[in-house]
Image (cartoon, rainbow, N blue to C red; front, side):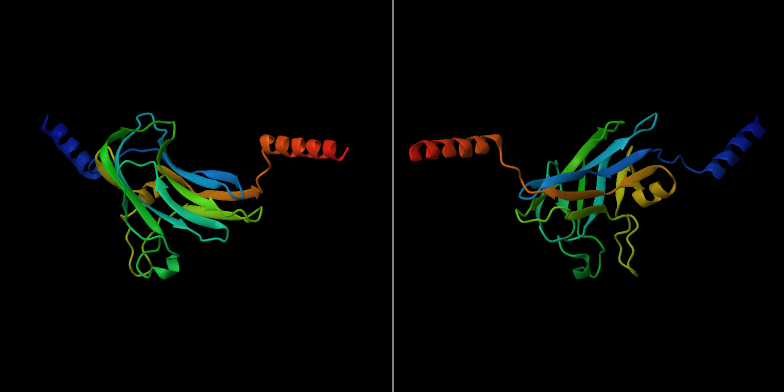
Length: 209
């Protein structure tokens, strides 16, 4: 009996404490918009594992490459949020290599295979934006600038344990997919507008006759 107990103790020492199991999928939506529209990029999370985790908090840094024709309108559709950085080109931020961060915590949210939207990022698209223009929206997996790394910043709280997302990705426990906004063209006239134009032409033709 003593030998069994000693073997179990040795096994626990070798294995160490139980780790958080997760098959987490973090994604930013890829969308297409017309010039003059509002673009909404959603930040989504899912857990495709056999026993999905419960999410009780997160710290998510985002990197947005500024591009002509787009205007940052803010973030929405969240419960509790703290802006951890200012929206500015990363070159203007000498300490942290991200544009802004979003954090949230509260009652555990049970994850599942179906994606859940954590929050949304809104952008205005200029009416004169050229078709084919793109705006990348990326997760910043290593937000620390050279010489000042902050490896725990991009993190999730899963089953009441804080998990570094970069480590989770490296171990195969998570995948991260970035987003992209693409301008596909100028707004097409609505059916009502076309009908009004056609009716106006008909009235003008009758008056001339």
